[in-house]
Image 1 (cartoon, rainbow, N blue to C red):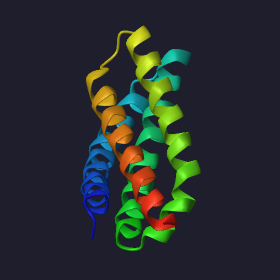
Image 2: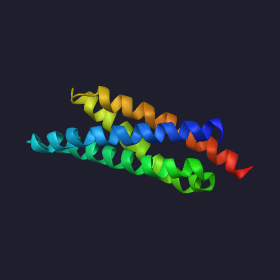
Image 3: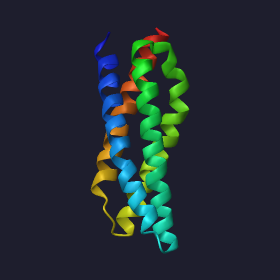
Length: 123
C-alpha cells in the first residue's frame, strides 16, 4: 500500500467521522429552519453529510483496490462544489462556518489523495 493509498484511507475514515458529526447539525438545522435561507443551510449541511458518508465508504474500499478510484472522481467534484457552496453561503449568512470549512479542507485533501491514487493505478 503506497503512501497516497494510506492517505486516502485515513481521510476516508475522517470523512466518515465528519459525516456522522454533521448528522446532528443537519437535524438541528432542519428543526430551526424557519426562513428560506435557513432551509438552504439545512439542505447544504444534509448534502455535505451525505457526500461525506458516501465518499468515506467508497474511499476506504478504493484505497485497497486503486482501480475503483476512477468512479469516485465525478462524485468528488460534486462534493467539492457542495462544500464550497456551503462554506460561502454559511459565511455570508453569518452562521457556524468553522465545521464546514474544516470539512472542505478534508475534502480537498481527500480529492488530492484520490487523484494521486488514480494516477498510480493508471501507470
